[in-house]
Image (cartoon, rainbow, N blue to C red):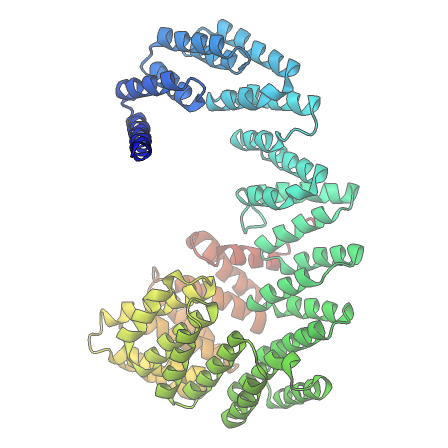
Length: 595
């Protein structure tokens, strides 16, 4: 019984203490310093070794301009802890608050002298200088300690202070020195640097950082410098430059090809097919691994599929698939290749029945439940392609239930939403899409948000949803690769619902289909209509960017392309296309940058 009472007593004391601390903190945050000081004084009395209590109580006195009490507190702390040399800083700052700068400077110098004598005191002394906004003194303290004890880890504080002082070049150099002295710092330093750079290669901080790293690379070719350059170029979406760095690292150290694979995957998703092709080709030239060879060849085929424009080339791609199957078989090592082949048969050659046979055979070989899930998703895609929506929904739902919480399940849920949308069941689609807002994959959550906005914006104006149903029908025809029918459906929609909220969406969708079918003049006309239709519309920057790309890549009109990109730069500063538009504008203008 006595033990139970003792435990209850201890728990009560602990609870009361934590309540007092919370109350003192609340008063402090609100600026009620008299009330806060009363509680901190009691807390400090019970635990004079707690620096937080001491510092908060000191600040309360100083905020109320009770400098004598503040001085008494500091002097008492100095008596209790004579080796806490940072107290010279606190006393000096107390004088500075009273405009007694001569006395303050003498105490700051005394604190710096103690750091020279006792380098270990730099931690608290530097921290005290920083807390009191005395950044130059803090720098001095840390730098002295680093010279006295090179292994001390004050570099991170020094760099941070340079950042506060906006001396960005010194900050970057300090971080780079840390990596140079200890490569284990690389990952953490990269996180700190990421706070100061953007995805714009012309950002001043980006330019400073690139120059500093290039200088170090020229003086001492370390993998760390190539890695940092590659990482910087990735942030800027300069994928070709990033690949150059990754190749240099691989050639120097003959390390794993993983980073080049990762880069190739990112560039493929970004539709930078030229860089992706170079990356996969490099992999093929430098690996003996059958798994890596198959993966690289599959993705090179994928690039061909996504860029193909003639039936003759489609037939050649089919031959290439079959050549790979002859060479590597149709076993577990080519599962993804076989799934890709089924997709190709359906969506490029319009042979869904052949594709289903392929997928059923693949399913017999697959062991992983996630691969099986992907196979079922692809089967359901084919069911949507052939207008068997209910069967498709059942199949997607099975995957979503069997693999709850996984990315495969989230993909299945997105497909459920899209299929429901194609059917015109917009309410059920939106329920699924709302769940996907917090999807772990940014691509999935973005796709879900975009479709949810499309549905939401249009059902608000059209209660019977006729226009949206017609648009969804066109979207389905596009998914089924029935491009002419999709274009015709959108033409009817645009004629019947002129001035409707969905008009600009329909024009944009139709323009994409015109581009896909090489009808560039019609695509140009649609983009121009969007731009003139609603000058402040949410799709105007999409139209400008797409039109710029059309002029640049298909119509070879450099001046008009520059004009479109320039409009985004000046008139749409918050556009997601701003950085790319600026980059392409400079490229067309002939700007050159340091490599």
